[in-house]
Image 1: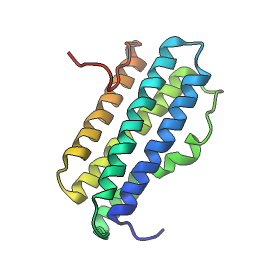
Image 2: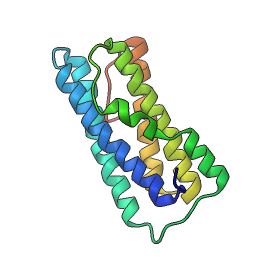
Image 3: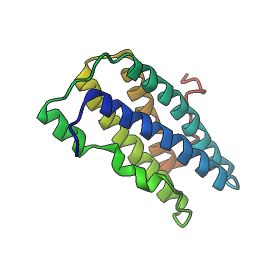
Amino acid sequence: MSEMTVKRAIETAIKAEELGITFYSELARKLSANQELKSVFELLSKDEVEHKRQFTDLLKGIKGDVSISKLDSAFMSGVDIASYFPAMETVNMNLKPSEILKSAYDFEKDSVLYYSAIRDIIGTNPVIDEIIRMEKLHMTQLFKYISTERKFRGLSDSWD
């Protein structure tokens, strides 16, 4: 494994968001017979488009590249969301809807950890803070949906 740098960490985040867009869009398409699940995955996909844009803008603002400490690098390796990438390249429709929702929840949860590690390295940043806040909301809503089948809400909804 090559040395972890700030740019590499953000590039991994961008790749995660790209795969999330494709994966969630494909799930929405394949689960179109279930309007509620279709809606869940359409909202997730839409939100991931915004996150990709935010990370891309953040990457453009990084001047130079900085290696990160061994401790931070070890943590980043431990919560590396790239481990999800192979499973997100194809949609396994043999899974039950509850298993698909659980996989989405796990990906969102690990994204929060990974993005929090980026924030720890680069310092407080309003863009990263907003992405983490939204990923936490995704987790919360997925968990509520899994446990109660409550409607899912995305960035496009208000949180009154």
